Length: 306
Image (cartoon, rainbow, N blue to C red):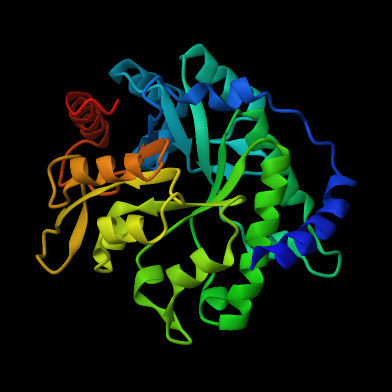
């Protein structure tokens, strides 16, 4: 299935390779995020988004003081991370003994120029900056409605995913996608979006960052999803869930405080090949977000996953 696609993508990527300078990323740099157990646990900085917006350096210092060594960004714009250039932001992380193995930036249809069969400079710069930061993963955390609601458009954009994967691979990284709930709710041609995306992306180039909480909202079970596509989830979001205040739905909560069997999910993921776990919490049940991050760290430490 992928033979003709690979040839198509490699042909298209010749243009990419000829228009930008691709830095060499030493394998020792990419893999230093893995500890001796074979996996790493990071924190998605969206979990403390307000604090990162107001005082990013002070917030990172607080997280480092809790014990966090790895983070995943959720703010990149105009070639800056949280308002800082890659050099500035990397120095902040380096000074704190922190690393950023993964990051979230939406890959939009506007990032692909179909007339040139090439990515725009904006996306090329993003990949270049991610490589400079030492990332292993470039993750797109959303999918435009116009793409996900049209079968042919979705298939076409999965080819763009594959090409982004090839571009990232030239930098020593992988491209990936982070799910919400709609991928497990919505169907096109009688097939769930998640299945279409898994079947139309090349596992060598595209990693799927499964979000345990988002898929739970849609009724999907981690054990079944992990088993259906083994080896596709090298990067996984850990999000525990609890009933919301209105009692009509669910929201995220501290690790081990919700209804999901997080330890079981983590073990299943490890056995399935996950090498990076990313803690994410978006709701706090009236508690201070930073205090919640301390609780998350302490629970993961107690479970011996951090």
